[in-house]
Image (cartoon, one colour):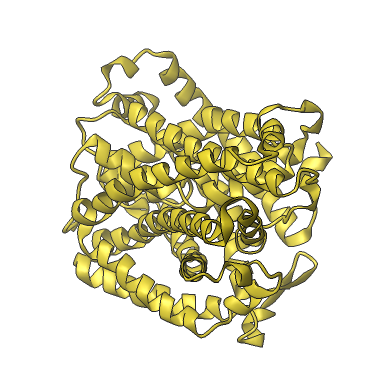
Length: 475
């Protein structure tokens, strides 16, 4: 029996909370990195098409699935498929995925806290040194920050949907956008920032290939929190008086705007730091970009604003990233908590405390997989090299599994939910949806080309990560 199920207080509460889930490290760091490595404006154009044509129908389907069943992913899949065991297992994959993502996301958030504190205390010149990141992530202070983060995050979750998740989103989301816009205004005033603008906004379609499309779709899917069960769970908290299509559009616009603005901040900053920047020379990793490359860029700003000014800019940036990471982490962790409440009959307090213990346990292993524990550092071989425990979680659950769960969502909607009933759910709170072009497109896409695309992306991501072979190169 479902107990202590919350509900968002309003449509705005849902939109801000869902946007808070979607807007995270993927928007602020991964998107600019991928844009820089995949042709800048070309990547941006393909990304927008992926969000509009592929991800929007899946987003609407996940929210509708949650609101229709009033359950977490396991309960939602099971209810729609009349408790068929295979679909219940599919729902459990949508619970395991956010749990594992939360483990490595927790560690990255701790790194952000570390850099924020050190930038605030005038340590920017040390942070800009090439080897400092490896020293910082093996510092014993890391475990102190981890404890503080867990207390705050699970304190929010303990407060429930409206007083915890929604309240923090109402505070953090406006603050995030204000800081982001302020930083952009500052960076665009720097010399040579226009070179970064040109690279980011003027497309060169000769750089368009299958790699760009694959990267854009993977990023769009991760960025919108699809395939994690988040939007299914949040849909179960969504009022039946509000419009799913309109709210989904606003969530997508906010999420895409944050990614676009992040590119508008970071790429001009990179070119301002070095007008002759070759994007191929930039780090291929979001982690390398934020913790190794960006501190060097911030330090270079001391020539125009002084060391204190540069430290202030770095502090505001890491605070911005922390806001985004924190709101996403809260959303990710709510999914297994909702599962425990719905399926196991736990009280929210019991579910939150159990989840806190489990995530902290695995996070400690992830934190020690960068040299503290040789076993966890060289945990498993794949992709032609030894990978750490942290690498395994990040690669598998953030890049490989997500499109597969999205594929399963399409399949359960196509095979187990009648077209008329699905449309009726989407039309609740939005009478203009019935008979619209959007209704026809959503139904057609979810039952035809979208699941095919997601299955191909899943297979190609697995092939690239584990066997270093690009399946799309065969097409």
